[in-house]
Image (cartoon, rainbow, N blue to C red; front, top):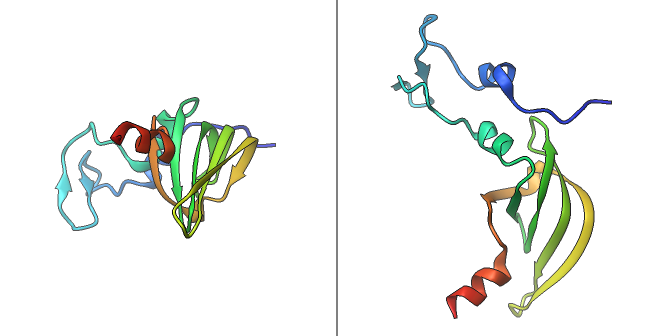
Length: 125
């Protein structure tokens, strides 16, 4: 069984292309980033382990839960989850779940520390 793990240097190398052995990172637009403090996407997700996440999915579902672990495809294990489903009439129905494995291919947006759609609607009033 594979343990939940952080990114570390192994994953960091996977998402960086080096420019002729230099410490600079070649970006997708062929520009060169000289910043050694660049935070890569999976590093941000790694920093969220143990924290609450607001996850907006494809379709009409949103989730808020505590991130326990993830893999390279951003499949996530979450606990203390609240699933929010939005009906065609705009009503939001919450459902509590103890623990889930979420397929990363259906994730549109991750909001670290997010509270979910109901709390945000209440704050706007």
